[in-house]
Length: 181
Image (tube, rainbow, N blue to C red; front, side):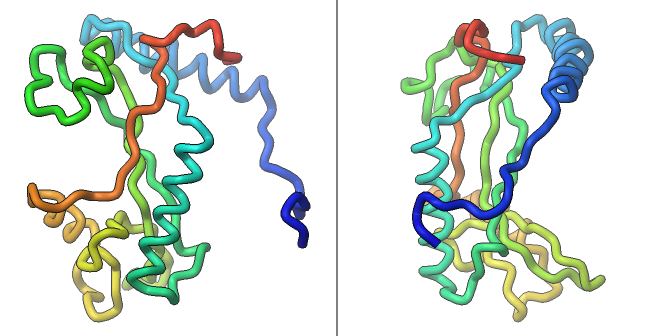
């Protein structure tokens, strides 16, 4: 297959369904968050394609560096809903200077790599793991240990970093005029 050739049809959704889902979030969840917290919370996050491609390539490269047998189909990304700290709680927040306090308390997404592993019931589950830390890989010799526990333990150490991606452009503070939904 040539580089510019694709097999199959891309995934699609009906725009009316997308609009209903977005409206449902904004009219219920977002409205409640804004009312309770008294903020104008973000309702979308966007990431540049270059950023996403690099993150995916890094997951593939560093995972296979640890275990070359890992198939592409076993790798994935989990999107965690997250929120930036309150404006007066940004001390020690490592991205404070690059992000800006106008993001305070707003929703964001944090992406964490996942790796499929067969669970005790025979189904395959996506476990969080850190491609930079072999101890977080769900391996057969740790059959009874949950890799997510290992992931949390490894992230407690100040000397280690967990492969993750954050800080796409959130709206607000960016202008919503660029959105379709």
